[in-house]
Amino acid sequence: MFTFRPNHTLLNPKFEGYKLDSISEDNLPVHHALQRRPSQTAFSGKVPLSFQEVQSRIRHNHLAISPDTKQAVYIDAELRVIAIKLDNETPLFRTIYELPEPMQTSLSENYQREYPSAVFLNTEILFVSDGHGLMYVLTVPSFGEGELLGTYQLPTNAESDTSPSSSTFQIHTASPVSEVAALVLLSSRHHDIKDTDTAPASAFSRKRHVQFDLFAARIDLPVRKAQDSGIPNMEVVWRRRGEDVPIYTAYDRSLKTFLLAGNSPYRPLGTSTTEPYVPVPDEIAPIPREGDNPDGTNTPTVQKPPPYAWTQDSEELTVVFPLPASTLKSDIHVLFSPQTLTAIVHGESSETVPIPHYSAARLWGSITPSSSFWTWDAQGTSAYGLLALHLEKQHEGTRWLHVFDPVAQDIGTGISADVPETLDPSELHNIRESLEKYTMALSEGKDPSGLGLGSGVPGLEGEMDDEVDAAVGSMVCLTWVAEDGTEPVWARDGADTPVNILSTPLPGTRHSGVSVVVKSTVDGLVYTLSHGESPTWQHTSTYSALAFVLASKRDTRFTYHVPSKAVLAFESGTAEYGGNLYIYRASKPKDMWAKQAILKIGGGAAGSVLGVGAVQSSGGHLVILCLCEGELIVLPNII
Image (tube, rainbow, N blue to C red; front, side, top):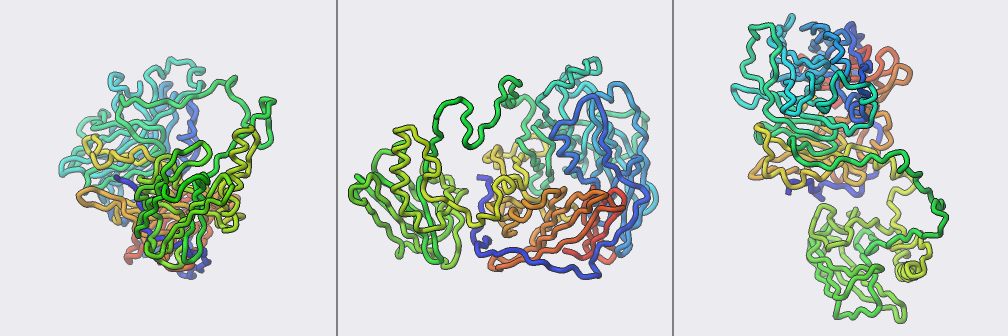
């Protein structure tokens, strides 16, 4: 199965936190004023921006990095293509091409324009979108101005379910797929065929189900200068549709496959999907709060207790299952192994108490079977007894995050594997009483709020905010598409399963391969795509408590990582309030502390951060560039 499985040896339950690490004066940010300024001015059109489009514009990186990381490119407010190259650590700017001013027509006003975007095919060829529906192919010489090789647009063909006019689009990635062809990946908001310039304005004001198309357009290699003055249509090789603009795209040359990461799968056209239901105003009701009684009745909300409770110390894990007191000891069968647990009780489950049925369920960590044991306490006349499993940890001092491996799929049907730890061992003795009250509440219709198997208080109680922590990262589905548009067999399992991504690779460091940082409880786990008979995600390193520290950064615009080195969180900032760059450095699995650094970027004359990337200086050092509204900020030797 193509899933994310953590390597427990790379986790660090003993991690304490991050300590501030000062930046050397030689590596402090250097600000350079921009004569040609980029812009993030909101465009206007008859169709309002959807929430997904607003989010895409916030995430848009205005800086493009060449494959050899020797130079970068951005497009200014006047549609000039500006190249940046470092002389030691001093940026040199030059205009390589000026895009024509787009023509305004009544039809073009129907659709929102995109931000201009650019991607390198190689060190000499650049694809540029003007944000108005045209793609320019330019040469990028080492010195002087570039040359226009051709101009393209998306095809206009109602029979193929494209938009009625040439749509605006954003360029995501471009890569050679053979010696004679390259594929350019574009995204565009999908417009219904009936959305034409003759449609009344009120038609656009209705709430529509917004979708986005992804196009893979073929460009012949080598790219030669066009001989005619017309604007040809791109040759679309394949097309997919999803619910959002991708937050991350990549091409893997070994697999000859594109990775598309968005908040929904990207499916071929014609695939049936269930559109979300949008209620009318009369169907919308207020959300009841605690203590509210909107119906004027005394209908209680009954909370079902979890199936077990557990606690731990440095040497042992104790897991307690409530069972009917009438259960015979001969009905209980428990088997311990170093990695799995089998606990089967013969009997019928009830609504009140599920009967354990765990068959070789994989544990979160390793245990010592010879020193592990179980006990059964029927507790006399009480309605419930306690089956207690005492598991001796194989690695003393390791703090378990779960009892069972949350990734494993072989846990008993209907029994949750994610039960919070009961930190106070004395609460285990209250399980029997809680269950009896719960059973009585079910029969009498009383409110049993607060009952259950212990309080399950998290270890960071008082510091964690569940709503804030849940919002960190991006829940995405990973879609793999081969060069010809088909879905690889190895990618079919888990394609619809969302994963919470905290970080993507820093532009300019893609030579390290395809990698993502995935949220796991409060940690960030680095997964790198591993090639073999069947591709897998390999857990290569861990940034302990990364999700926890990122949750407090509410103005983060970009979060990138350099595998095995650092995670970089860039705040947007404004002219009045500058943003910060938070650097979380990698640590070893046994380290109690890791280093973090904070640098002031943006704000004042610099304005907001619009783009980020890494390039090499003439001395071979990796330098991070921060493109702001009014300045280019150079960060030398910080990673």
